[in-house]
Length: 164
Image 1 (cartoon, helix red, strand yellow):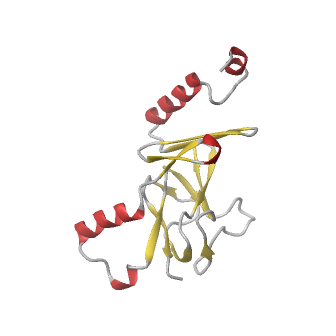
Image 2 (cartoon, rainbow, N blue to C red):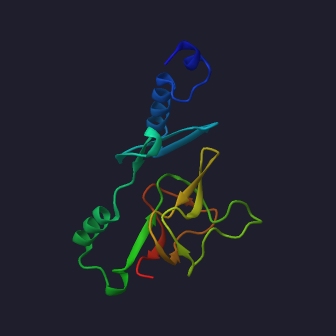
């Protein structure tokens, strides 16, 4: 990296990335997603790294199987009707919104079909509006949070029937 790239406001400047990591720790943030023109940097804490196309690195949340096996062992066998349900959890602390703005229809509602890339809600954290993808395919079975409500990291947001 040349000095001109470092001084031009490049979002991949090591000092800036380190400062972002410090801010994440200081404010207990789970994720930061920044874009500058064609460049993008996404930082997530406590997750497994995945190399994405274009050489960028993003991080995936813990898999549902890891979470569900821990929950099953603590509570016992899940009820039969919940076997096909996967829970979409909040990747961060913030405010939950069902739509892009008050005049817009909700991203999804009960009965809608979603895919892994479908945006299901927005979580506002520190004046940044983060679009949350479903990361599963299926039919929305339940919306577990009210519009405008605060959410915690790992809090269940939606239940999705993956068999439908």
